[in-house]
Amino acid sequence: MLTVSNYHYIRENFEANYPSIFGLTPSVFEKQLLSLNDIGKFIHPTDLIKNLDEILQSKQNYLLVTFDDGLKEQFEYGLPILDELGIPAIFFANSKNFEDKKVSTVHKIHLLRSIMDPADFLNSIENIDKIDFSESEKNKAQKIYVYDDKKSAELKYLLNFKMAYDKQELIINKVFNSHFEEAIVLEKLYMSNENLLNLAKRGYLGSHTHNHYPLGLIDLGSIKFELEHSKLYFETLTNSKIEMVAYPYGNEETCTLEVAAIAKNVGYKIGFTTKRGNNTLAEKPLLLNRFDCNDLPGGKNYK
Ligand SMILES: [Zn+2]
Picture (cartoon, rainbow, N blue to C red):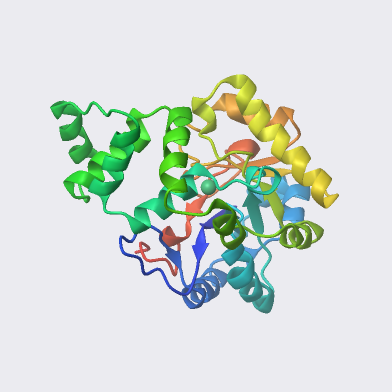
């Protein structure tokens, strides 16, 4: 059996005017690794690829640590703790951040939400593009985001359900550029090329696609590009094999059978969703389950 624990942000301080970036501090991360150590045996990504079937059908519980988004803080704060404990991991990065030197839209949204009141954020979007929010849509937003205030719920609904992702990208870029310097954010937020080379040499690098788009919701040609291009880019950059992919968002509508088939076709051996659960031989190698770290022992939602 294989249990996968997934991480994003690892930083000392998550304080913000409007908290919207969540993750673990290095000390909480370390504590969780020690708790996980009690429920299984950590496995190296290269060994997982080599012995996948054996691991999935084993009675022994194997554990894999994964990181999404190729963030510098994962390399700076996460990796030294892993190394000290002798625990391997895999880091899934987006090639767009390195090849095009652009910040992913998903991270632009995180950053904007951390500095802006939701009402101001909505207003700046409205200044660029007219938003037609019907009363029934406003009610729907409130029902989906029950824990959010009215404006936050509307903002989330707008970004997640109402705007096509390509249009969203254009609008978010405009708002982002009026608050941030992209080159500075890029440098601070993402790993360096040296970091990638270091990880690849150890078999620790995987693809999180090129653009961080929701694969199941885009056309087939784009799905293939997202998967294949990022693989080739990282392979050429690091002179190593990239055989694992973590699909952005990882929910059911983004990780379809078609997405898994294309991933296999372009040469991936293992693909990860964010569907909660352990993995046995019943799972498809290109659609393996992954827990958010908070849902596992040592995590804040674990009971
Ligand atoms: Zn991601």
